[in-house]
Image (cartoon, protein in one colour):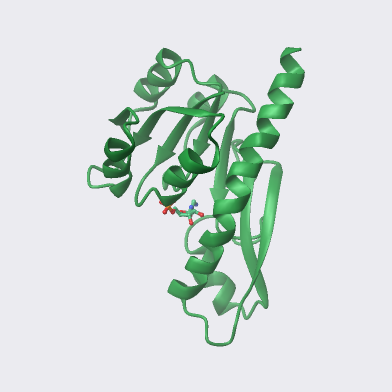
Length: 180
Ligand code: GAR
């Protein structure tokens, strides 16, 4: 499997995929914030990376690197049908809530403010509805009375490190069944 990863910030999930999925190669990481820490991680891990905000350029890059699947791991920008349709059913996104709850921004904060007892994280296929594609995998996280946005985000991320590699493996199985 040749993976393309898209990041906007820290890139801890990107690095985790690299370590947790030794059978899959991250062949290119695209980032859309010049100061993204993900870029430093890519350099350290010797993974090619490219700064871009332009979808035509991103599509061309993924094609040039012959990616089989694209993982949005902390990509904080809505992508358009142009990119989605270039890789149908091959783009997945990680989101810090139990979708369909709390789509979009500030998902962790919203779960706390609404007095939820549980939240979590989801990996889903990307379609034209924001955070609305078919869910592939989810994991629950309890919200403790003493939780802050920071502590809960950390707890959710620990679960993300487990479900994102598992979801990648799941999509890989589906793709290889389609090919054979
Ligand atoms: C992750 O927690 C992910 O759920 C969230 O960004 C974080 C990226 O962390 N994604 C979204 O909010 C997408 N709407 P990382 O850069 O350390 O992997």
